[in-house]
Length: 59
Image 1 (cartoon, rainbow, N blue to C red):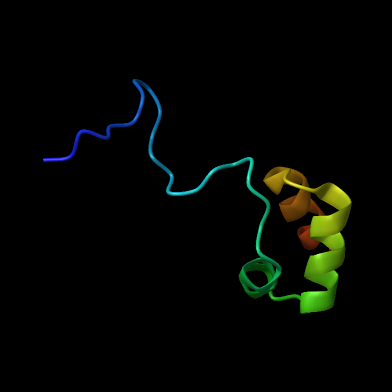
Image 2 (cartoon, rainbow, N blue to C red; image 1 turned 135 degrees about the vertical axis):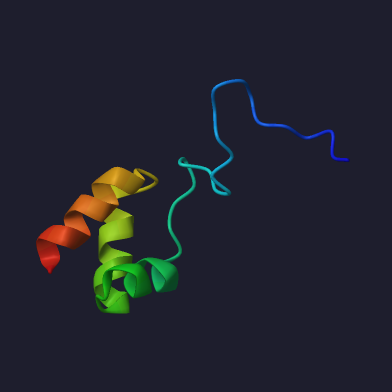
């Protein structure tokens, strides 16, 4: 049995919200070009919500 448990009230999402997306993963998720994904990630940094919103506006 593992000793690692999520903190009370927090689910283990499998990623850190503070880590920036990888451009290839982000591009595939949103169906956009890798160059556009790289530009969005460079503009918005590690803010995943802002990156997702920018990608949705691009579609």
